[in-house]
Image (tube, rainbow, N blue to C red; front, side, top):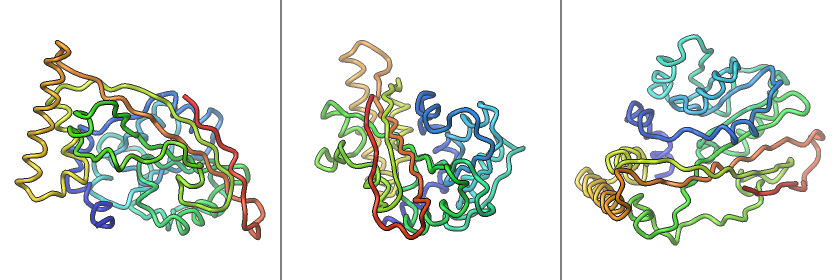
Length: 258
């Protein structure tokens, strides 16, 4: 099921691009400080993070395995170097990259193999930077509107290496809270691109989206507003591989802060 979910997004690439959220500037600033010469974005999807990189004057190499997602990105950024390739086969020379960036995709990769490939292309001192948009849900209706079970909430105090599923190298993490204001129809659009809902049988998916829209409409009515906010934490991790390839243990120097 995980494999089918990982490859499902391209089937609704245009909807994904329309309805999925972007990332806050503060998170991008932390992941991509000024002065970088060579950046590669892997698992770029339709370019939600790519937009920020281009706006900063960077000229990244963009890697995405799904050509349907990449086609959307290419329409918006026709001048970028784009590569239809996997995270385990990066189109870069050894030790040529300052940073490898991954937005809401690292969990789909074979992590040890992807980390080895990242290590190969990074220059000394370079890093892997990952970001996930994690909804912060304070009310039961929000969980229901997103089709989620509160029991599945991921622990907030994970070590940064644990978040990456790695056991070597050093990692640090930060979270950047932001809010997104959505109408009931926009909530519906967002949830329609979430794989655990979209991959339901058609009638169940439609019912789930109807329920999403109903719940958000009720929340809007209660608030006397046409839209309500969906709070996110942009959870960011920077990982640096061990310089000594023979090293087998690590200390993660991380902190999670607002």
